[in-house]
Structure formats: structure tokens, C-alpha cells
Image (cartoon, rainbow over all chains, first blue to last red; front, side):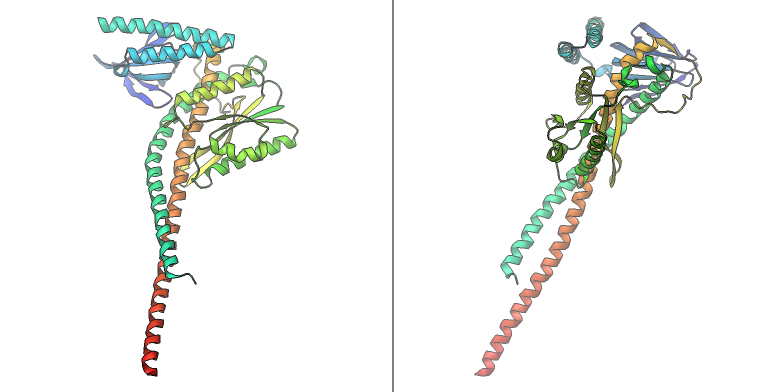
Length: 137
Length: 289
């Protein structure tokens, strides 16, 4: 199967780097799957799960919150504002994130900024629901 | 001529000092390893961010560019963000950053510009306060945080952005120390607003699709870029500080060692001289009988 280079980078460290078959990315415009030979694209991300398929039926999952993805002929790179291994994510972590987002929203005065923060908060809450459903299933 | 007791005391006190500097050096070495790893781990993100930004920015033209790239159109008021350490005893680390900032501030003032200063870290504040007491608008204290990270950088960046949105300044420059190696840290000034875009032509000739559109991406990307730049500055600074402290404490330990050697020699000599003197006195006393 055709593979391509993929990197998942957070401000603190590189979370994943290597050849992959496909990546599912939660972009703000909707989820998308990237395969080898994808058209060049830059898109922003929302809170969600990045699923990386490394071979046949092996995969890794990561939690990202905000950031952007850059796809070009040579490689695909996610620059996540926050990123961690999905195993490290639980309800407490998410609640903490939501709380931070809420404090930021109340502390902000700029209208555009407010709108952005509000969107981020809604995305986070949505993700928490999805996450809890997943866990229950 | 100091008495034998004086010499003994002096040697003991230098030895105690040497123990402290030695311990500080070892602590700094251990902290350095962690800080260096953090600084190096943060580099890929900043570099990628720069290339994406360069690609994006080459697409937007002069007047339509966001203010974070294009600037406000004037350069009357300058903001200097001076990042230093919270602690001293690290050689010329703090003073060399402060000196760079002071020179810049003086040069700007000579041109008739207004200068505002934000100090990140207490030591820089202590040094700059003597000359620029009135210009310092804020002191950001990171002493409470054991390991500085993205959250701290975000706070500082938000602070700067809020001031920029309120029209408090036109140009912002970040002062920090770039970590080159353990023995070499380079004080650096970096303009962050308007953003310095690497001039290199985008190497990919591929035409990107943007989702959502270019302007919107750029708008979310620019504040984030500021955060990343601040984060890089404080991480590089943390590594530099430990490196500077390590080499400063290393030479302090060595100096103390030399001093102990000299003092011990002096002590032994005067002790022997004393014994010889006493012997001569006894012998000449016995001869006189």
C-alpha cells in the first residue's frame, strides 16, 4: 500500500513521525481522511481525535485541540496547539481544558477573539460528549 | 601577617563556599539537560510554523495584510519584551541580555521614539529599573513555575496582543538569550510585531488549497505564531541560564580550589616558621647557660 510521510508536532515535542497509510484529521470544516498523493492543502483543526493508520490494520490515536494541518506532495504535517496520546486523555483532563477555555473567554474583550474562543469551547464540549460515548461503547 | 588561627578560619570558609558552588554546578548540569531537551523539542514546531507562515504570507499583499504582519503604519512607540532569569549567580547571563535591551532603548530614545518595557523575569527588572523606572510597564514573574511551558508563553503572548489591540505600541521586540552551547549563549533581539517573515522564496511550487480561506487561517495563525516565538524564547532562555550558571559555578569552584591551595601553603609555611623560631629560642637559651 502506498505510504507517505506524516508528522504530528505539538509545541513541546514531536508526537509522531513516520510513514503512514492514511490519517484521519478533524478539520474545522469536517473530518477528512488523507491518503498518499493528496492535493496540497492547509486547514485548521478543531478538538478531536487524529487517527493514524501505520500499516494494514495497525493504528495510533492522538488527541489534538486546535492547530493546523499542512499537506503537500512530500509530506503531511499537523501543527497541533495541544496534542497528546489518546491514552493520556480522560474526563478530568477534558474538564480542565474546558475550564481553561471558559476562563479565557470571560477574560477576553476583543469581539473576534471572543468568537474564536467561543467556537473552541463549543468544539471542546462536543468532543467531550463524543469521548464519553466512545468510552461507554 | 595573619595568625595561624586566622588562616585556618579562612581556609575553612573558602572550603564551605567551594562546596556550595560545586553543588550548584551539579544542580545546574542536571537542570540543563532537561532544559536543553525541552528547547530542542520545541524547535521543530517553531520551524514548521515559520515555513507555513512564509508560504501564507507570500500570498497576501501590502495593504490587505493583517496588522500583525503589516504593522500599524507607524513606529513611534516601541515595546521591548526583556526575558531574563529569576535568579542570579549565572555569570553574565542576565546582564548581557539587559545590556542589549538598554542599548536598544537608548538608541530608540535618541531617535525620539517612545519606549515601553515589559520584563519577564525579576533579574532583568532589577537591572533595567535603575535607568528606565518610568518606562517599565509590567513585570511578569515566572518564579512560581518550576517548568515553564506553553501555558506561560500563551499568557505572555495574550498580554502583548491585548496591548497591541489597544494601540499601546507599534513595534514589539523580544530580547532573550539563544542557547548555542553550554559555554556560549548569544543575547538576541527579535522583532515579533510586525512579524519577521523569512524572505526565502517558498520552495514548494505547489498551489495550496485553503480551508477555510487564507485570510482566516492567517488570522488564527499569527497570534499562535507569537505564542510560539515567546515559548521558544523562554525555553532557550531557560537552557541558556542553566548553561551560564554551570560554567560560572565551574570556574568559581576552580577559583576556590586555587585559593585553598595557596592559603594552605601559606599556613604550612608560617607554622613551620613558628616551630623553627621556637626551636632556635630554646637552643640559644640552652647555650646561654
